[in-house]
Amino acid sequence: MHGEEASIFVITDGAGAVYLPAAQDHKRAGDGDTGPNTGGMGAYAPAPVVTDEILSRVKAEIVQPMLKGMKADGMPYQGVLYVGIMVTESGPKVVEFNARFGDPECQVLMKGLKGDIVPAILGAATGGLEGNEEAFEALLELDGFEPTATIVLATEGYPGSYAKGSIIRGVKSANELPGVTVFHAGTDIDEGGALVANGGRVLNVTASGETLKEAVDRAYSGVEQIDWPEGFCRRDIGWRALS
Ligand code: GLY
Image 1 (tube, rainbow, N blue to C red):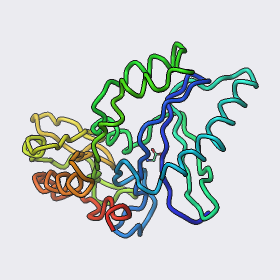
Image 2 (tube, protein in one colour):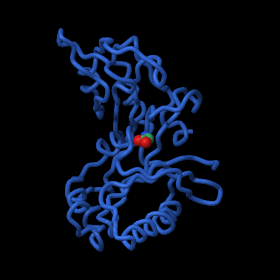
Image 3 (cartoon, rainbow, N blue to C red):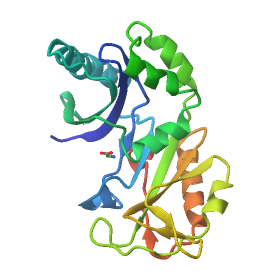
């Protein structure tokens, strides 16, 4: 398939479906989408490639038939459905389904959402979403969703082999910048009390703004605060939407 990939997140009780803002991940390790595939080096939302028309097609051609089919088969799907799509010349096509949020798309959604996600999650578990989608969307305050980006800081060598235990400084300063939140992924505290890298993808420097450009600039300002010589990140997160 050729086109741009996007991630669609649906909270469903098997019949009703509440859609979160579409996100776009950056799977390659290097700038310009070069280098090896990774779990994701950065993400942003909303993703303009998912226009209202594309989203309508995703709902009608992919998600509703899938929910209906699983219900008819006696195994309704309840929870968070991650639909990875490719926006091709002939419309949205499924790349993958995952029974979970995306990483790092989830960090972007949790930062950008201003409302409460718990009622929708509870509704997915206990039922009651069908016919009440607008009420749950109002609780999520989807209209107030702020453009948000996250930059993944990874250990040098990732997604190949990498060392653990290097010391990371400056996370507190990054968190003090306007609109910035640093989510931890592969971190630990060593015996001396220092924050250290303990994985491939280590930190998610996440920021919201009035525009995606402001969000990306704020996130990179956060990255500049972090003193970690053994880490690296992509420098072009959001490029498709910003170019
Ligand atoms: N960001 C890709 C994934 O979570 O699978």
